[in-house]
Length: 261
Figure 1 (tube, rainbow, N blue to C red):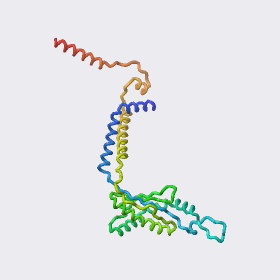
Figure 2: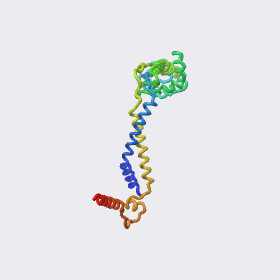
Figure 3: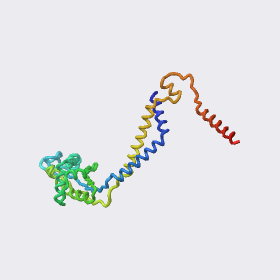
Figure 4: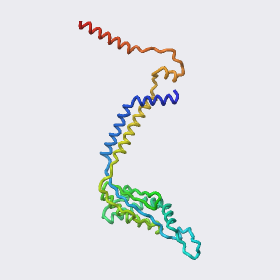
């Protein structure tokens, strides 16, 4: 059987089992809803936005000249911005190390008398640069509104201090937008997870139908027989089953009428 015939056969099989596909789709959506409702923890987030600025340092960055040998060469604000943008990924990686997480945990514990570990900080933080700017954002997400806010507030101090010590003061970070305590939990993501469940159910049902169709060796028509074995069909034996059933029904009805008389 050629590829087109196989594809056609699979499409007809899928259309023929559309009820099964719909059932599995609904089951997947239901399972996604149940999982989200019972196994997804509500979370709270606080964000801090930082502005990174390059400090004037001719020994490290000055590559411009104003044409006056006696005048001091100073990099332009544009050059500073370009430098910071170029190095942004490096600074974000520096703040994704165990050393940084431990530093924040120590600062937080000293501030609030708590006992949080570096692993707690690692699991709570998400760092990302703001595209085409010299800014980056840190998002703190935990299952406690107060904890997320406390970590975010601590980062307002810890991150600028950490960056200064790591780059010898070449780049400094200042808080552009302070953290705000979350007043409500974030959405559990019912639509997304239900959609994923429905897609998984549909895929599972579709795979079952396709595999069953491909491994079905039964010949259902003379055309399939010709395609499969490349031999002509000289004749076929008609099915008398339906006719025999009809005759039997008529005979039974006639006999019943005779008995009633």
